[in-house]
Length: 480
Image 1 (cartoon, rainbow, N blue to C red):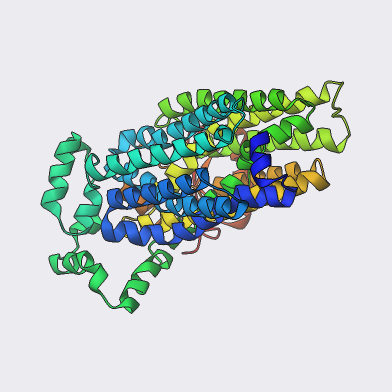
Image 2 (cartoon, rainbow, N blue to C red):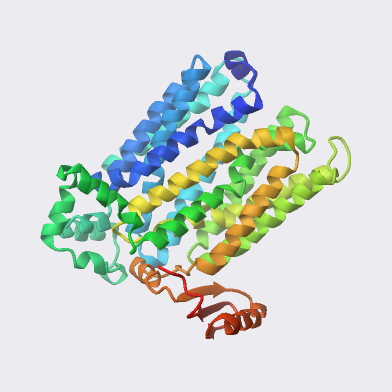
């Protein structure tokens, strides 16, 4: 937008990356404290506080008169995002019955993609405004939406019944379950919470009055032996989610399409808008089938698709097959970008967020999910900051980097990721307490390979059909 350049001047690739990614660095820091805030005040209050902080930052960004004010406003937005986003996923997982948890938790991703789609076309509509309103209006709308979210969280959303139960307020928890219309047969019994003595629950409820050393010790519970494996897997998955390159594509879509040969600024911006429509469209079936598709298969096959797309794009640029004004190479890149978005949004986009939250024990769920969200924001910052710098120095290197990170994620998740679809949160927690069970979801052609490896390095028993195998290894067990 020319009015944006008139206000702030032309930005170098480094400064461009810094402005875009400033929201992510502050979000990473805020996410570290979101779990403690959520555990102390409750899920809905934490969401409302984060939304209000986000609204303040968006308003400051919309009213920016210089670049420093713009970056500062984005940093405040990041604080708000870090506080409410991870808590939002935790809240939905905690209020959902097992058979609908994926479906309901995926609503977050549906609204994210809807907002992304609307944002592109609001900006496409305001780009014709000659004044600075062309870029201030979309930012101001963000502030209004965040205020509405804060009001809804404060006055309309019931508190999480699991959080109430964890605090010893069981009568209130039962009332909320009734309010949500969740039948008693569908409610997951939290064995850990049933064992909490009233005095212990009272101490938890008065957590803000405990000595600071005890509060610090409580925050570090996520590293205890009962939850560190889940925490490590959640942090890894959320960090690697961003190293797929998704936000490098979303933030710099116009730049990527220009690099591929769409020289017109309007044409590249319109292509970016079409990508937003594609993202929203493919999120719908992912949302509808969230509780029908295996979490493990979705992660593995989605990662393979992401790897293939990034490798193809990188190879086309490395072989000098992409030309601005002619040849099929540029169209192959554009199509590959769209296919990449389809694979990512139908699998990794919402599935990893749900999985990273639902595998955590109730005592550390908010803290571990917040740490995972912080890892997500840190890698997101690195991707957003370095992508324009990489593209300025190499047209293909960054694609191979994203592809390599994706295939690494597939390998790790194939080995260490148990299936969670349709299982209670407590059953999921129990699966991580059995370190000798490693779950593999694979085609039947891989059964013989696994059998040979197992017989050589340890005893193995393969049970199941061609879709799911459960391999029990004594010498290759995951250490606790």
